[in-house]
Amino acid sequence: MVTMTGKGGPLPINIETADVADLEAAVGVLRALDYRQGGGFCRDAVRVVKTASLLLHWGTVPDRLRARLHTVLADVHNLLGWTEFDTGHPVPARRRFERALGLAAEAGNDSLVANIHYRLGRVHLHHHDVPGALAEFARGRAAARRSASRRA
Image (cartoon, rainbow, N blue to C red; front, side, top):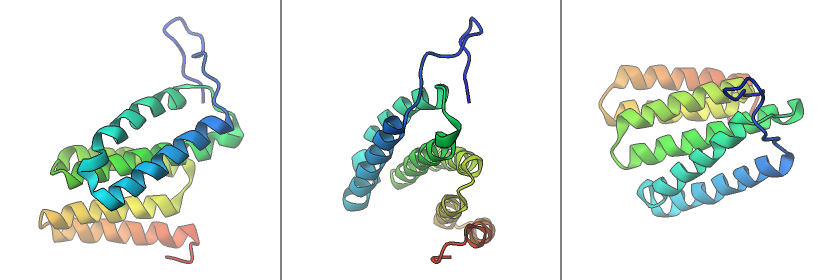
């Protein structure tokens, strides 16, 4: 994946394993904070991480790191969607979850796809949309089965 500058050349950012590992670690810390303190506590920090992660998405990524990078980028959007939902912003939450779904699918990470559909289902339930929730849960179950996860 190479993003081009306005002059037709690639952006001068080469993504390495350490870059992806650092982003994974940051998301892990923020997810733990969200779990302990609630989404409102870390929402702004997740937004900063999302902005920084754009540089990784726009850089030159070796094939061996592509799925891993897309997974962590999907997880950033997934966490941001959950913090938006927690703080009463359903429209941005859905937008983040949809972006997370695209990235998780691009990574081939059906386990994460299942998790995101579950969260979208929760958003629908919160707004009393039972048919929408059931549809998301069904999509999540299908993705979980594809993932071959023992948790499915």
